[in-house]
Image (cartoon, rainbow, N blue to C red; front, top):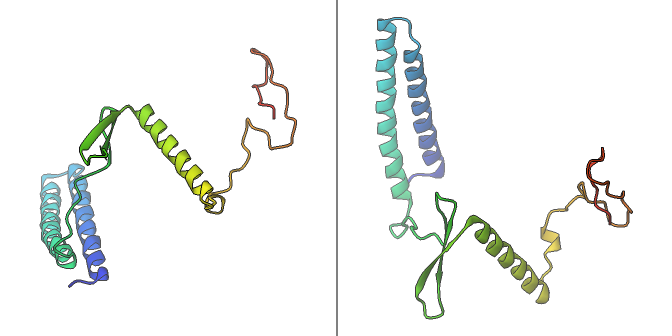
Length: 165
């Protein structure tokens, strides 16, 4: 069983050899002569061979370190699509699988509503969220609580409108 340090060392080695191969290829592309190009191309091929060798060792180490039951999870309850839509995979009350297709705006709205409802439920059962939330500073155009703020200027005026509190 490989140690975590050994796996990280293999990852670093794979990355290092890959970077060396890329540098050698880039230098070969800018070489001034055929001999220099051939030398750098051959060096890149050697580094690529080392990448392949270390990659196989890395895969072997990762497989040895994981239990047999560990598998890649192919199910994603929320999956963004390339067309800007979002698939939401759910089960109904009869345990039937459903896929709900949402636009990006609909997905954001659903997420916001679920978050708000979750916060309300937690508040009602006595769990307060404030200690875990970051402090929000007053930011323009909003004035801090208790200040009067400036009157909004009409369209075309020099200053931008400011909200009043």
